Length: 126
Image (cartoon, rainbow, N blue to C red; front, side, top):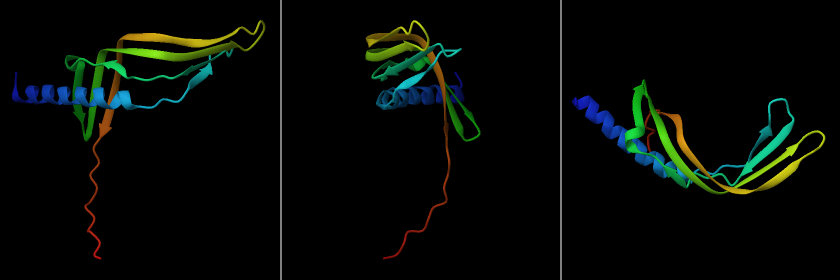
């Protein structure tokens, strides 16, 4: 392995640690919408990523300009007490709601973080 390859591997491990710490803290509001064609309305609540598992070997990081791109694959997440609800928007108007435990396996995403440098502002005198 080259020195640059070793550095990118280290950045990948740090990125994985950051994502494992940051993502479970995200707060999600309800997700709702309509099916294609509008026949069904749905809503998902109590979505959280507290059960997220990311393998550092499944994180690839690259730099594009001043942006760090982290690509994560084969992630897993156990989601407890997920709320769900749906209703049919036309006859016979079927409706239901409840809660469930869900498991995500083989998920993936890409996340870009930009680095912006601001000029240092002089401190104000008292």
